[in-house]
Image (cartoon, rainbow, N blue to C red):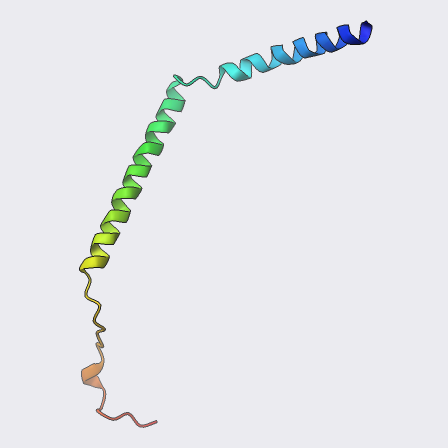
Length: 78
């Protein structure tokens, strides 16, 4: 009987200690709302960045350019 009573008291103490910690994780907390808004904004910015990269990759020509072509002789000596 004493063990059961001690276990109940121990559980009650642990529940009392965890209550303030649980109260801090409210969904309507301004800091949590600000973090969620910032995360959403960062995701939107990332999507726009990736779409811009895709557009520029499609518009870029695939031909190779040799800037030193007119500086070389026609035949290279090896």
